[in-house]
Amino acid sequence: MAQEFVKTKLKEDKVVIFLKPSCPYCVMAKEVLSKYKFKAGHLEFIDISGRNDMSKIQDYFLEITGARTVPRVFIGEECIGGGSDVSELDSNGELEGMLQSIGALQVRLGGSHDNTARFAQLAPALLVLAKLLQKPDHADTCGCQLSARHALQCPDHIAS
Ligand SMILES: N[C@@H](CCC(=O)N[C@@H](CS)C(=O)NCC(=O)O)C(=O)O
Image 1: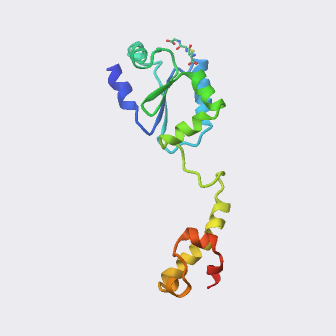
Image 2: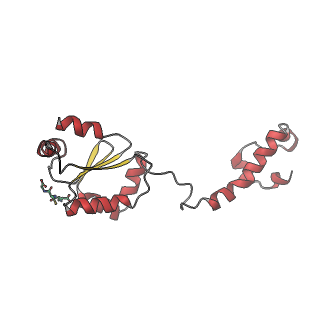
Image 3: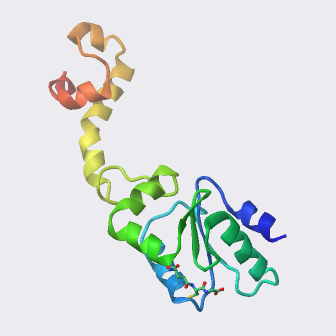
C-alpha cells in the first residue's frame, strides 16, 4: 500500500527523497544533498517512477505535504518541500543545521574534516590524564582539578 510504503521509509534521523530520475528538480535536490557528509544509511533516494503505485504515492504526498510533485524531500519525518526548497535552504545556510539537528551528518570535531589540529590540542590533557592514572594522588600533591579542561588551560601541570 502506497501510504505504508512511504511511512516505512521515513525515520526521525534520516533524510529521504522520493524522486523520478528524469525530473530536473530531482537531479538538483540530489546534487544539493550529495554535498553533505551523511552517516551511513542516513540519506536515501527513492525512485518511484517504475512503481505500479506511483500515482497513489503522489496522492498521499498531496495529502501529507500539500503537493504531489517530485522530488518530495523529508528531513526526519517532516517534508521541507521540493527541489527549489532544498536548494534555497542550502543557499541561505539553514540546511546544514537542519541535517545536524536530526543527527544525520557525520560528527565533525572543529571546523575541518582533518582532525589533526584538534588531537594536537587535546594531547596535553591526555598526557595529564595518563599521569593521573599512574599517580592518583597527583591532585592532592599539586592541587590541580583533575579535569581535561583544566589541563588544557594549565599546561604547567604537564611537567609536574
Ligand atoms: N517547485 C517544485 C517543482 C517540481 C516539479 O514540477 N516536478 C515535476 C517533475 S520535473 C512533477 O512532479 N510533475 C508531476 C509528476 O511528475 O507527476 C520543486 O522545486 O520541486
